[in-house]
Length: 147
Image (cartoon, rainbow, N blue to C red):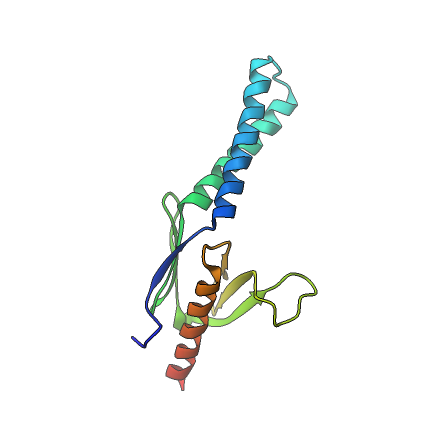
């Protein structure tokens, strides 16, 4: 393995984890207040649905792990299925920036576009700059091997 190409595992950023937990607390509290008040109308159903979606968000934000190593990228969650994308399957990396931002601005997300199948999004990661650096190093290394 070349220098600087060691593997590393990333979690979701603290902001993403806090936002998911805050949403669950707010919607869960709203459901609790409506049930305590005896209000069982459509509003309760809507709030309960939002609370369930927030719970899924919490599981995603707190359970996601993204590993970038010499073989590729593995995205996994403690409860959901994992996905591996090998570097030689990646056709290109799309960098997403805010609308109207210059190319010199740091990206907010990376999309790994494979030859077949869905693209893999890398966003809201703790130490996102390091994740970008590793992806770029591995893609440069892969291009050299193809020649």
